[in-house]
Image (cartoon, rainbow, N blue to C red; front, side):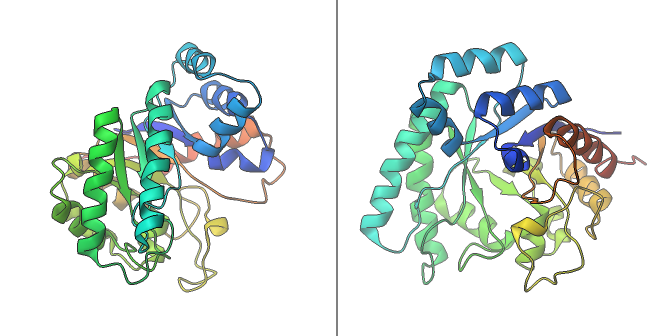
Length: 277
């Protein structure tokens, strides 16, 4: 049984250097239900003469959902001036995303967060969440396995709770769980309503945890992660949202963009199939 919805993170198509319209068409043609766009690609499209209205119409015509977007603003930087500028950037970008009909935006620990306490990060996230909700978009708190702070699932849960943001949501990623040393079993302590979206990927045994990088990610089920157990835990805690294929591979094995998207969809459905009973 596959109880989730499928999405394609545009990063998976980066080797093909496609514009945002082409990314959307590839995802729709492959059969995904949603797509995660990157703000930088949307801005490039607008700078070339495109409009938010025409992009929104294209998305509507394909029937794709926009469950989340990828952005990089320094909302938790240890420098106050940088942090304030980050929030201004977040306001502009979230307004643009809301106009597209996007539901949420990733909020990773981007910038200089070394030395920032979890309490300070919680306070910063509360400001970001209020800003986003006033605009009509939900920031998803994302932990990065290589970050100086907010590198583990437990830290993300703590920040979400300490922020006081009601119904705060976390972005999950198997690669970051592994790279940061979080135990996948810890997911069982969560309620599925606390998860905004899940990035779908896998990781090899080499390079090891200390050296592994984003480019080393592999398709779900083709690495060492226990994807079936991960999916079963997600199901058991009540998560029924999107699994979004996020890879940063440099070698596309001779596949076209369409073939990569279709292959990835198949890997998601196979790797995260849930056995009930």
